[in-house]
Length: 279
Image (cartoon, rainbow, N blue to C red; front, side, top):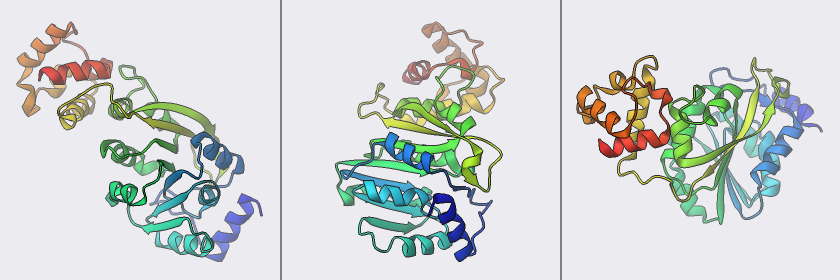
């Protein structure tokens, strides 16, 4: 059966309708699945953690290529389908939990594979928290290959200091090298979403470009700078306890040769690193 036929069969058999609250859209384009796995370079040496496998469309191909696939799925109905569909495979583990609550470090350490890769078709409504978790927890992973809303892909892969960037862009650049792989039209799903998607890859930096004592404070500074984008950087972050007030921030910007009227969005990651080092 084709992917479309299999998807329709499973939806009918289990009386499944896509959950809007869980951001479910079922992928039915075989070429997208094949290209995702090819770009992720999945092989038998790899442990793959798949987030939100749903009906298991991508899972099936991952199981054929990977050493082991760990599926983290929140929807209990989908868990039932995954267990029944893949009961013959001995290289699958299914976890019924919220990915934001799962101890991924413990899973990776327990399985001891040469490489660990994250692969997922991420729900649009929760993309940012998931990406931030994967980056900030300093997991021993090699790549994150995910399908996201095209607008989000633009932001994740933007250059810091440009208008396309958001607070999350800085975290992506700090922890990884981001690249766009290919656009996925909305016709590749049922039900059909109103927007296009894009598959991107984040290659995790084993050696970070910047050595920061307190990463948490760096990203808090960036977050505040972007919370009120129309304000100047000084006005946006002046109330942060570790900034020491407007005059202190102004003095630091002067030392660094940065215009005191600059907005946060115009600062590069390197600028933020230099500022936090002085703070």
